[in-house]
Amino acid sequence: MNVLLLSMPDYFEHMPPIAIRMPNGALASLAGNIDGHHPVAIADLILCHDSVRQNVARLIHELNPDVVGLSVMTFQRRTAGRIIALARQLKPSVKIVVGGYDPSLAPEAYENMGVDYIVRGEGEITFRELVRALESCSQLDGICGLSYRTGTRWVHNSARLPHRLEDGDIRLPKRSSRVLRGYTLLGRQVDVVETSRGCTYDCSFCSIIEMRGRNFYSYAFDRVLADIRDARDHGARTIFLVDDNITLNVRRFEALCRAIIEAGLNQLDYFVQAMTSAIADHGATLAPLMQQAGFRYVFLGIENILEGDLRFLRAAAKNTEHRNGNQAGNATLRAIDLLHRHKMYVVGGLIVGNPEDTVESIEANLEFARRYVDWPYIQHPTPYPRTPMTEDFRRRGLITIERLEEYDGTTAVVRTEHVPPDEIEYRRWKAERWMKVRHMPAAFRHDPWFVIRNAPQMMAHTFRGATFRSLLGLESSRKAFQRYKAIRSRERVYL
Ligand code: B12
Ligand code: SF4
Image 1 (cartoon, rainbow, N blue to C red):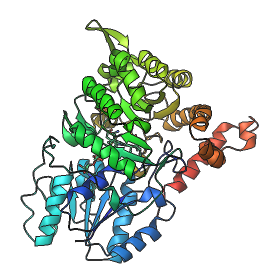
Image 2 (cartoon, rainbow, N blue to C red):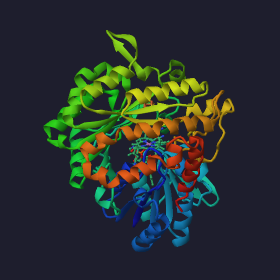
Image 3 (cartoon, rainbow, N blue to C red):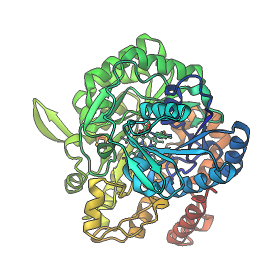
Image 4 (cartoon, rainbow, N blue to C red):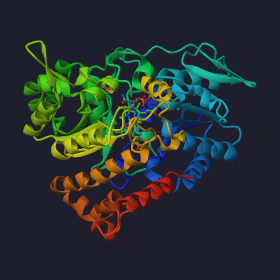
C-alpha cells in the first residue's frame, strides 16, 4: 500500500520558518514501523508552508497513495480539515488517518471531518496493525488505540497502553522516506531524536499526562546512538532530543552524555528540554557533561517566577531546589547560572496570563526574562483539550477565544481576573522582540554566513507590524501591535 504521511504547515511566533524548520519525529517513526514492503513518503509541510495546496496536490498525483496520514496539534486542526478535504477531492477512495495530540485528546472533533481512522496515543504499533488490516481486508476491532467508522457510527477500540520501549519492537525512524528538503535550526540542518517517553509530573497546562498517563520509559543507549548516527548520516548537524522530560532520570542523562562523547557524536550540536530542579540539584556534575557532549541550547521549563502562579500551573515541585534532602526555594536562578557557566544558552519557557495575574505580575516575569534568559520562549496559558488547566479556565469563565487556530501559545486566548487578553499579549510581544535581537551576536558567532544572509528577514519577522515611526516612538507601539495581529491572522491561512 502506498502511504503518504503529512505534518501540518502551521507555525507559531517562536518558530519562524526562515530560521527554524524541524522535522516531525512522529512521522519518521511511523514510517520505520510499518511493514517494509509498503512504499512510504513523508512530507513536513512546514518546508512548503507558502505553497501547501500545490505540494499536497503534486504529492497525491505523483505518489497515488492508498493511505494518507496526518499528524495534528490542536492549533493545526483547521488546516488539517482543509488538507483532508483536498486529499478527498483529489482521490475520493483514499483512506485518511489522523493521529497526534489533537486527534488523541479530542477524537470526537474528527468524526465529522471526513477521516476514516483516528489513531489515539502512541502510533507505531497501532498504525502498523491498521495498514496490515487494510492490506488484508481484515477486522479492525482488535486494534487497540484505533477509532474507525462503520457506516455512520464510530467505534472506539480500547486504549493502547504506552509501549515500554525496551524490546526493540519499535524500530528506528525511517528518515529516507522524507521527500521535501530544507530542515534547519539557524542555518544547520536539524533532526529530532527520542531517548525516552513520558513524564511523572502533572503540570496543569501540559497535554502529556492525558495523552499517555504518568510514566517514563526509555530506549537503550545503543538504539539512541544508532538513531543519532542515522540523523547525522542524513545530514543533521543539530539534534533536538524531543523527550518529554529527559531530566527525570539525571543519572541516566549523565550516562547518555558520556555515551555520546565516547561514540564521538559530540561534534553535533544538541538541544534539549529540562526541569530547573534537576539542573539546579545535579548541575554540578551534569552540566559539564552536557557541555562536553555538545549541548548548546537548553529549554528550561521555568513557567513562572511567582509562587502563586507556579501553584496554579502545578509546576512548583519541578522548580524547587533541594539541599541536603530539604527544599531550598526556587531552582531557576541556580539552574540558569550552572548552564551559563558551562557555555550553554537558556531558552526560557515562561507562561504569563494566568488567572490571578495582574499587569505587575506579568511585567515581573517579563523583566526576569530580560535579565536572565538568552532566548525568550514566553507563552500564554492555552486551554488545550482535556488538560486540567482548561477546566479551571472554563469554570472561571476566562476563555475569550474559541478559535482553535489561535491556540498557538503566543496568542492570548484567555483573560486573567484583572487583565484582558489583548493587553497580556501586547506586553509579551513588545518585550520579547528586543530580547530576541540580543541573541543575534551569539547566533552570528556560531553561524556567521547564515546570519549575514538572513538577518534582514529575521529582523523583519521579529518586528512584523513595526515601522520606523513606531520604533522611534513617533507612533504608538499599540498600533504596530494591531498590525502584527492582522499579519498573524493572515499568516494562519495556509490553504
Ligand atoms: C518536540 C516538541 C516540539 C518541537 C518539535 C516539533 C516537531 N516538529 O516535531 C517544537 C519545539 C518545535 C515544538 C513546538 C511547538 N509545540 Co510542541 N512538543 C514537542 C514535544 C515535547 C514532543 C513531541 C515529539 O516529538 N514526541 C515524539 C513523537 C514520536 O511522539 P508524538 O509526537 O506524540 O507522536 C506519537 C503519537 O502522537 C502518534 N502520532 C503522531 N502523529 C501521528 C500521525 C499519524 C497518522 C498517526 C497514525 C499517529 C501519530 O504516534 C507517534 C508515535 O508514537 C511534545 C510533548 C511534551 N511533553 O511537551 C510537545 C507538544 C506536542 N507541543 C505542543 C505545542 C502546543 C507546541 C507549540 C504550538 C507551542 C508550544 N506551546 O510549545 C509549538 C508549535 C510548533 C510549530 N509547528 O510551530 C503541545 C501540543 C498540545 C496540543 N494539544 O496540540 C505538546 C503536547 C506540549 C504541551 N504543551 O502539552 N514542539
Ligand atoms: S514536567 Fe514537563 S513534560 Fe512533565 S508534566 Fe510538566 S510540562 Fe509536562
